[in-house]
Amino acid sequence: MVLKLVDVYKYIGGDVILNRAGLEVGEGEIIVVKGRSGVGKTTLAKIASLLVKPDRGSVYFMGRDVTSINDHERSLIRLSKIGYIDQEYRLLPRLRVYENIELPLALLGYPREARWKIIMKVMELLEIKGLENRFPHELSGGQRQRVAIARALVKKPALIVADEPFSNLDEYSAERVLGVFKEMAKDGTAILITTTEMEAEYGATRYYVLKGGRLYVD
Ligand SMILES: Nc1ncnc2c1ncn2[C@@H]1O[C@H](COP(=O)(O)OP(=O)(O)OP(=O)(O)O)[C@@H](O)[C@H]1O
Figure 1 (spheres, rainbow, N blue to C red):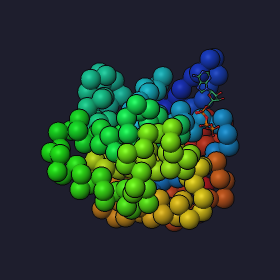
Figure 2 (figure 1 turned 90 degrees about the vertical axis):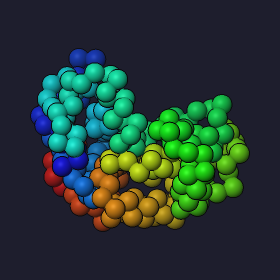
Figure 3 (figure 1 turned 45 degrees about the vertical axis):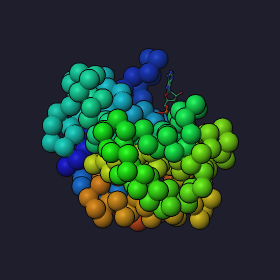
Figure 4 (figure 1 turned 90 degrees about the horizontal axis):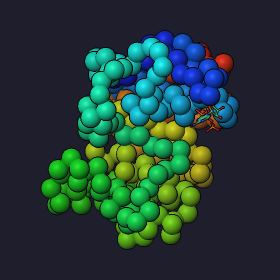
């Protein structure tokens, strides 16, 4: 199992957002969490990507209990093993597209030549080649979203957590991104996707619905 959440609770401003939520994502699996707006999908995605700690419950990553590890260890795991696609993209505004996508590879010490090859391949797959030298504010919403996706994919993480990754994409681009996720799953990557589309059919391994703080298998 790549990721396992057990009896996770999260309280925000006195409200219980996650109420004994449990979830598993195995190697090569695509898991989709559906839920209406404001139900707690982003909160769940942040816990799944080790950005946020649950108030109660346990988080296991690659067989290890990571619930209480320190921030430094948490950052190292996130940098090397987890690709998080933020709903708001969070591209660095002063860096060009190429530099944004390059950042995780640079931090992981990939040599320049190898970085270039990997980045060009991923940009081609996501159909954003040619935008290398733009700044994030010079992109459309859908292009920004794909740059954020590219940045999460280049390091070939063990787990991808994608928080509403298709929300700004047209049908064609969404299909294309889903195709890339499926290829990565074939290579063993575990993928967790959230969506507000309650009828979504992504050819996933398993669907959950998040409701009242609980996750139900759909
Ligand atoms: N920092 C915060 N302070 C106060 N309330 C918050 C905070 N972050 C989230 N919430 C609340 O927690 C609940 C869950 O938010 P979350 O962003 O996880 O939902 P979501 O399902 O991802 O929503 P959406 O589909 O609209 O993105 C919401 O009611 C939200 O208002």
